[in-house]
Image 1 (cartoon, one colour):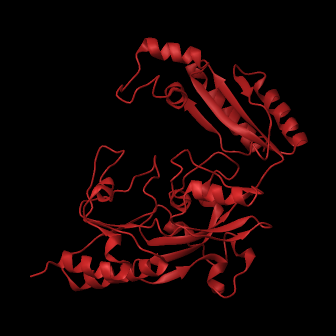
Image 2: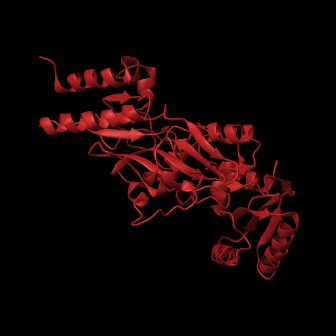
Image 3: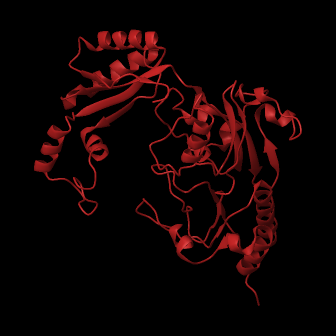
Length: 355
């Protein structure tokens, strides 16, 4: 007699095709790897071809789970490479992973309003290449993860980046969602239009009308977000990366206070990253300096690399964005704010919008 699990696998194969259901092999084994100490192992990996497949699969799991005592878990992932937040594994063993890598369409690009429609499988590299092909009139923000990290997946996990658009969830709207009961909804203004007649302004006003519901699909299991509209930022005339650091470990409070003040006064509009010396060393050193087989650096190596790379106990990094004149003003204001403190300021050369 065929097991319930095998029956389910056969039904899934009928929806997405047998090659798109993995139960063994090298690619399947990759979904059991993790950057975390604990690892889980999936029952199968499902690779839907499109949004309609996702809808049918969720409906199938609802039907099967409602008819059987044995329940099957469906765990969606986008790229599975959102390093620093999670990996591709589910929270428990024997889950069915729904791998949304094929939902990688980039559509509805508006080079006037600076919006673009992205699927759950669109990666940072794919979106960058797309915008580069369009002339980089608008920029995306990027997280420090892999180039293969999903833009939408990271945004739903409330990831962060570096530019003024660094709060990623703030810059997505008009979500297409498949709910746990198998129904599909659209949020924001998108719910009032259809595929035959879309309005470019849909992605401009994030809040839509009535109760704002997008937030319940962030860091949650209440639905599978298959698509969203991403608000881009206009490429600035120039930008100036900067670093503010202190050699004294006890000055972290001063550093945080100065950064907070600069942010509140809108002198610094970008995200600001503050790292301690260990994190700075990890970023600065390559494998020749710090082999993967070496868990930690000796005190001697630590001091040597700190001196060689001119690192400090705490370092804040960000950038000034705007016209040439604006950046010059922000730079002077930033220097003035730091002048009375025991903080070290440095910056790279001004860069134009073409980098």
